[in-house]
Length: 91
Image (cartoon, rainbow, N blue to C red; front, side, top):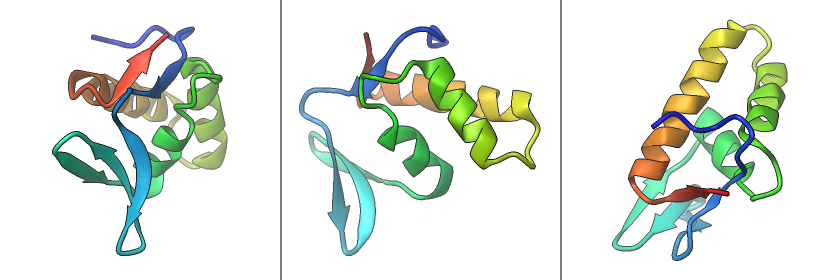
């Protein structure tokens, strides 16, 4: 499922950002996903306020040396995987 660019992703109920041994993690029921670099940048922006398009635009500015379409594609793929794992929801 490709996320709608106008949807508002947010961390799903029962999941939250946390720290484990000074490493940022996405805590999910019965597991944790280590976050760093772009993955952390994406999840931190899944606050229910920003749209998928806003997240893409912000990260394209941060990673301005990367091809914009590649950044967009990577973000959409990552959000879809997180949604499949029930770690984020789209409103």
